[in-house]
Length: 344
Image (tube, rainbow, N blue to C red):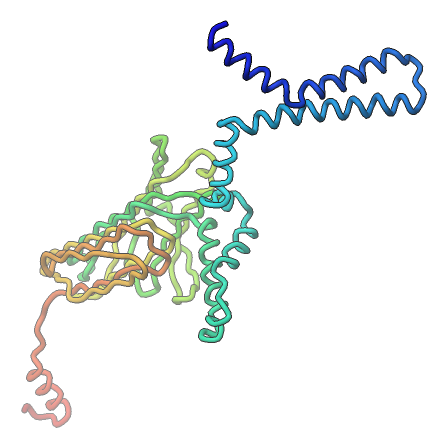
């Protein structure tokens, strides 16, 4: 007999010598008793059923004991324990209520922290609520704004034409509608079109004449609000690429141009270029908890970018105007003339 055959025989003997034969023997005895007593009294029937149960249990236990000693079984158990104890991947599959309880347990303040910060629990609860609500909101990525500031000869005002593009992702309930609004003071501001592109190559344009602006009252005051419904894309589209072309108007020689993120956004880039003698006088950013960069090669061009996640309320504001001088002496003389009726 070769060494390979001897090794296999040794493995076979070690496997079947552990309790497997005992279990099979008990099952065989139960079969013999069942055949020997065609008409069974109550006690014999109980003994046969007991032998069957014990024998089968021993056979299954011996097979499981052997399997638990294999490397495949050990690797499987190790992976399960790693997912639970180390990686905690199971937390991603629990329901929202259980996730909230887990977050509360993880960041619950200690007794000493409660003494120092009496209201810290309310703050943490607000943070947990805002974190859990992210999955209920459509998020965006690749948010890019290219703007051009110029003097509109027709309206004799400063105008800013903006081309906005971003990728929109749905929640588990689908897509939320696109809402575009202008404040009550922006009566001349218009939206040329809103374009919705699907990942399958389809494209739908909503021109200005199809956008129905309605007067609404929000926290910031009265606005004109238009809505584009996206519910029809919920089932067949994993994302949507949105394009918005709009023009905003300011005063005769200046405009305050704001950008505010109204949804969680994975990074943004805002580029502005001025023409017709307009310059960027001031700018400020409202970016919290993320690194952003501002490149301003001249007073006529500026680019602000952020490559991290930003929350609602993040944004920038730019003051654009045409330089002009004010003759304070002439103004003082004019006021004196109106007061006395004589030229100074």
